[in-house]
Image (spheres, rainbow, N blue to C red):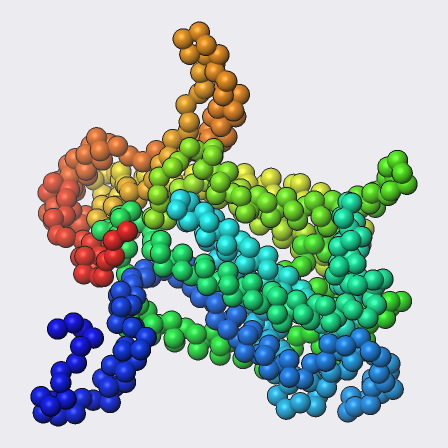
Length: 584
C-alpha cells in the first residue's frame, strides 16, 4: 500500500481523526506527499545566517504595510490647498501626493504607525541585505556552484535599493523632492543617453506632472514583481545547492549537518519572524522617521539645511559633495560635467561591478574549479578580507561626507575642512584599512598555529625545580583542533612559461597577470602545522607533562595524560554525528 492509499471505509472500526481526513483530502488533490523530502531538509545553525532571514521577514512586512498604504495614498501631482487638522500647513498649496501623505499621518487611524513601520522595514531590509552579502564575501560562499545565485542576490540588492529610493520620493515633500532633483541631475549627466533616460523617468522637465505617478507604478508594480521573482529563484537555488556550513567535526564538502526543516527549523524561524516583526513595530512606535509635515511640500526654489537621504544613499551624497566641480566641453558644444559623472555614475558603477563580478574574478585568478560547500573564516583569506573591508571603509568615508553640514554644525567645525578630510580620506582610509586588516588576519593565523603547536593558555603557573616560572599550556579540545587543521589553504598559481619546446606561449602574458594576482590573493599566509610538526609538539607536550607532574606530584596537573593525548571522543564530534545530515 502506498503512503497515499487509505483503507476501505467498510473495514475501519473507528473514524479517522479530522487532521488525517484533511491531509488525505489535500494530498489527493495537490500531491503534497510527494514533497515530503522538503520536511527533512537540513539547515545548519550559525548566528550569521540570520541576516538573510531578517531581510526576508522585513520584506514580508513591507508588502503588508505597502498594500495597506495604497488604499489611502494618491499619487497625483495635481495642486490643491491644504485644509486639514495640521495647523502649520493650513492654506499651503501642495500636490495631492503630499496632501494624502499628511492625511495618512494625522487623519487615518493608525496611519502614522503603518507609515513608519513601512519605512523602518525598508531601512532594516536593505541593511540586512548588505550584511548578508558581506557575510558571503568574507566566508567565500559565493564560489562554485553558487555564482549564479550570487548574481541573483546582488541584483536583489540593487532592486531593493531602487525600490526604497522610489518609495522615499513618493510623498513629494521638500526632502524627497530635493533627492529627486539630485537623481535627475545624475541621470542627465550620463553621457549620450542621459537626456533620453530623464525623459523616460520624469516625462519632461522636472518636476512636471508625471514624476510621482511614474515612480508610483515602478514602486508598487514593476520592482516588487521583479523582487518577488528573483527572491523565489534565489530561495529555490539555496534549496537545490544545499546550505553552506562552517568547518567542524564530521562536516565535509559532501554533507550538511544541522536540524531538519520540520519541526525544528520551522519553529525557530517562526519565532524569529515574530521577534523581527516586534522590533520593527517597536521602532515604528517610538522612533520617529521621515516627518514630512516638518519639511513642507516640495518647491524648486527651496532647500533645507541638514537635508539627508536615507542611509543607503548616503555614500552617493558624500561623493557628490566631495567631488570638485570639474567640467569640460567637447567638440560639438557638449559639456561633460565630471563633478557629477565621476561620483554619481562612474564610482557607483565601478563599486557595483567589482562586488557583482568578484566570484568570477577570483575563480579566474586562482583557477579554482572545485565545488565549495564549506565556509572559510575571514582570517584564513586575509587578502580577500582586507579588500572587502577596505571597500566598506570607502563607503563609510563617503557616508560621513554626505553629512558634512550636519557634522560642521554639531561639532562646530569648518565645512571646508570636513570636505577636504573626505577628499583625502577616500584614498587614505581604505589603504590603511587594508594594511591593518591584513596584519590582524595574519596575526590571528599565527595565534591559531601557536595554539595547535603549544596548546591554549590555562592560567596555571608552575615553578620548575631550578626556580623558573612557566605557564601550563593545555592541548586544544579535539573538535577545535580539527576545525583549525581542516581550513583550506589554496596555493598561488605557478609562474608562466615564456615558451615550451622552443614555441612561444601565446597565453604567457595572461598567465603572468594571473600568477601575480594569485600571489597577491594567496601569498604570504601562515602555513598550517604539518603532521610532523604536530607530532613533535605533542611529544614535547608529553615530556613537559611528565616533568611538571614529577615536580608537583600530580600526574594530570596540566590536563594531559602521560603521552600528551586525551583519548576521549570530543563532544563536538559526537554532536556532529547525532544531528541530522544531508548529502550533497
